[in-house]
Every structure is written in C-alpha cells, then in structure tokens.
Amino acid sequence: MIFYAKSDLGRKRKNNEDAFFAKSYNDDIGLFIVADGLGGYESGEVASNLLVKVVSDYFETYKDSLKRSSTLAVKNIIKKAIEIANEKIYTLEKTDEKYKGMGTTVTLFLKFYDKLYYLNVGDSRIYYLDENKNSIIQITEDDTYVNKLLKENIICEKEAKNHPQKHVLTKAIGILENIDFEVKELNENFGYIFMCTDGVTNMLNDNDVLKIVKQNDDKYIVDEIVKTANLNGGVDNITAVLIKL
Image (cartoon, rainbow, N blue to C red):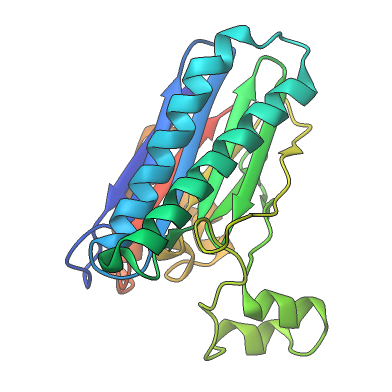
C-alpha cells in the first residue's frame, strides 16, 4: 500500500496542534489517522497526539487477533479505541486546569484485507478520488454548526462559505464523557483516499485539491497541497495524507 503524509505548521501558528499516524503493516492492512487539536496553545497539541497514540496502540494490540472476514469485530475494535481515547482526553481535561477546553477532531481510515473502514468526528475530512483522478467526493460529514444549518436548509452553500460561525464544532473527541459516531465501510477497490485537517480545506476548495492531484505525480501531491495552502494564507496547521488503494 502506497501512501504519502505531511504535517506543516502553516504561516500563522506558533505550534502544530495537528497530529497524524500513517502505517502500512503489509499489503492487506493499513491504518491512517488525522487529528486536529482544540483548546489553544499546548492543550490542543496534547489532545491530538494522545488520540493518535491511544488509537494506534490499541489497534496494534488487537489486530493480529482479528480474522479477515470479521467485519463486526474490526468495527468494534476501532470503536473501542476511539472511546478509550475520548475517555482519556475527557478525564485529563477535567482534572488538570491547564488542559481546560481541550479536545480534538479525528478522521480514521483502515484497510483490512478487502474491506475499507472509516470514521470522523469534527471537521477534519476524508475524500475519495477515482483511479483516473477525474472526480473528488467528500465521504465524511462535517460535525459543525454551519453544516447543521445547511442540512436544515436554513442557509445555502454560498452563505456557509463565509459564515461567522463556520468553525464552531457540534462534536469533538474529549469534550463530552460519551461520544457518538459511526464506523462506516467504503465499497471501492481502486482509487485514492485523501485525508486532511481544515488547515487544507479552509485554504483550498475541493476543485483546487482535484486540480493538484491531476497535475502531479502521486509522490508530489501532498507536498504541493501543503505548499498551496501556505501560499493561500496558511492560517492554520496543515496536515494531508494521500493513500493509493
């Protein structure tokens, strides 16, 4: 499994509150996690890194016990890992004053033999691109106040782009004692998965990303996306992961 990953400070931030994990265990198993920490200096960074470590460690502990055809068991392992991370971040936020308001987004993508699993909490995203790089589709749904307004037809797409509450999340890891989310399956055999934080999507729209993907060899795409996000302002930390299925 071929993948490329990069995280960048951006042009405005003093520290990187994004974190990622990208690992191909073999041709059949690969785990990818992207997290964007919340809560300001230090605490956001702690939350995102804690999530990535807890979830990846938990999966690595139990992956060898999973059978190839055990879809429910795989989903349960992923779900349990996220729930443990949520509990640890929530407890730390409640017991240490310097971590007050701490939390993190998460997107996770897992290839386990012939099955593809994914989830998200917050506004970090996962996209699917076809193998010929002709189309890009966001497969996750943003957990944001603005997206809620869009779904309820209170505002339109044009209004959403510059809405003053654009960055208000309705859900994040570590904010509440219990977290509600769904582990979904993607029924594709070929193409690309693109994962990123809002440091990318606030600086580039979907067509911008598709244009970069089409115009560059795979090994240069992530670097070019980070470079372009910085050229467009780089107002946040920038993390991008590209996976070839």
